[in-house]
Amino acid sequence: MNETIQWNDWEAFCCVVEQGTFTAAAEQLDCPKSRVSAAVARLETAIGAKLLERTTRRMRLTDAGKAVYRDVAPLFARLREIRQETLAREERVQGVLRIATPYEFGAQQLGGVICRTLAAHPALDVAVEITQGLVDPIRDGFDVAFVVVDTDLPDSGTVARRIYHVERGLFAAPALAASLPAQLRPEDLANMPTLTTPGDTVWEFTRDGQTDGQTDGQTVSVPIRPRMQTHNAELRLQGALAGLGIARLSVIYCEAEIAQGRLVRVLPDYPLPPLRVFALLPDRRLQPRKVRAFMEAIESMMVSELEPKAGLDSGMGAQAAASGHAEGEARPAG
Image 1 (tube, rainbow, N blue to C red):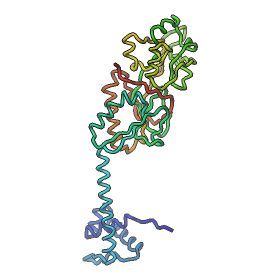
Image 2: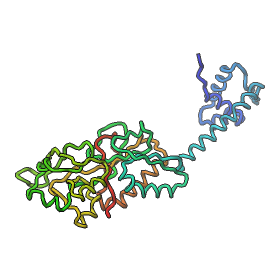
Image 3: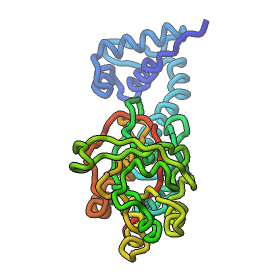
Image 4: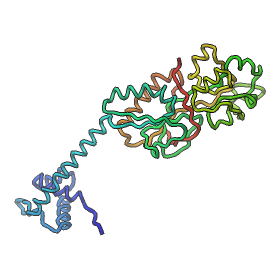
């Protein structure tokens, strides 16, 4: 049967030798002198040899003690060096930061902050993987995983920081919009071509104000008939511009086309659930310095660049797991 090695006893012995007395060793180890004495006694019993000859006036190493100290002391010295090196590394932003993100969010929102973070920390490398849908940063080995969803994330062990939310709407080419009923209702979309993300079968609307005798805030669920399904927001935008159907897009994403009159908003009195962007992290405690530095840069970027455009959501630090239907369709205005 293997016996557990009491490495603290070995360290106490080395400390006694280096400090010269049990009293000085106890002060160095910040423990009672009796504990140091007991540790050395246990070590002598464990190895079956006397290590120190002690009298009331002096202490000297035995031949066995000299051999043990010669072999063991360099190992503890190296361990102390490794500890200091590890602490120093954690104070520096270095290593490889692995990030998962949907395409549009990574290219349009994260691109700038990643470049600025790399410029600020020369010892840091970044690996970005384009993902879609569910991402588990622990299982998949990411330091940070961004997801864009249209619902809240359920509780779980993963830490999720809600970064911000993006307003969405329905958009169509002017010619298609002109052919729609004058008193268009959400229910009318059931028989119209739409441009959606994969898996979309129902769009939900919230009535804004008194409409058709319905109360304010009532949710309306409408089955839809997708003509195009893609996670790529640019393809849905191009389909809308070509008059192929009504597309659900971020307002910011198609702001330029709206300003140019190439797209018009459909059903503006029926707000859609906003897109929510979450940063998923494996753990809230003892996050590596590289992760903390990157999240600080993300939060700074959101405040300076996105708050005036998309509305910064201040809810932070909720326990969550990646879930829901993700869409990567946020891009800066213009």
